[in-house]
Length: 411
Image 1 (tube, rainbow, N blue to C red):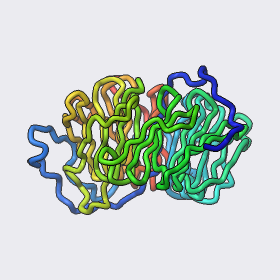
Image 2: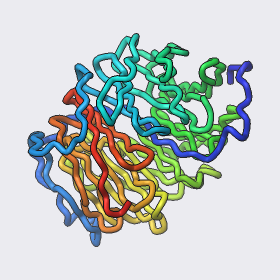
Image 3: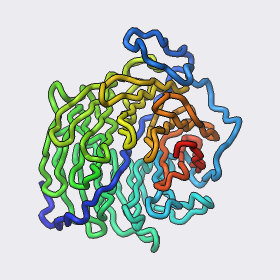
């Protein structure tokens, strides 16, 4: 471990908080002509299969449900995060080598984060919305103070895979393609590194206790790191690890469970305190894609309201898992691949965004689609939900970001 000048983070800074996993999404074209999945699959007897069974043949939005359409990007928009304090500002990053901070109520630009050398694929807000961080594919990371519109810190690493702020302190974590995980104190720049065993650090999540981070690697290994000491508490390897890249991660709010998703088409439920794998979920059934390299467990989530887990695949299937019994309650079929899912914070509802340009809201108890939002004319690549639960913001290959109002009867 390096960085002897790093100042120890006070215990009071590590208050309980929640962070969302940020993944860089590979957009994969799925076969539009594959027929709907066969609900009589022997591996899924007794399971409900709900939703759309056919892949999308083209994106034509008859209705644009968006309140705001943001058009300042000149190419595909890859990532978005909404500020946690005011819930009024979004930062988006795109293939035009730009990151932009803008007002989701008016669509007006607040700050252009200039100087990037490549596509901006990771963005994030500090816990108090004072700082915004942006990172591009070349490995250039920048931090901006929003109120003064000034760049306060930058660093050039290897290609960035993910970026996350600590939600109790001005501390930024970044995982890179060479397997390193960096942790900086902002804006001073004091640093710790969590040393790689070789393969890339593909995904990462800071746990709600603020004291640990879970990192998934390209070789399928999962590690739980102590942020204060820099020591690896647990390593999930061998038969317990994934067979290929860990591309998605999520932690339960009570810090007890971790859920991981991989390109090997499995998800693993892990006890965070011991590193023991409780169950491995097979997510390979009911595929829309036709080739092995066209699928992965792209997004995972643990509900804070009900004892369910959710997995979303690039094959277009969201599965709702009963954590107590480790069986699938429902499989929710989408028109195209799922790039991200998020549980509602106060109800048993889950949101999904997919390559067919649609955001959907599902009731996890019934597996039924309750609401959908349309307007995009190409694949959605990321979305975020405001901390107050009032809006969701999407970004898309159609060069736009859109703001939708959330009107759900259960919230």
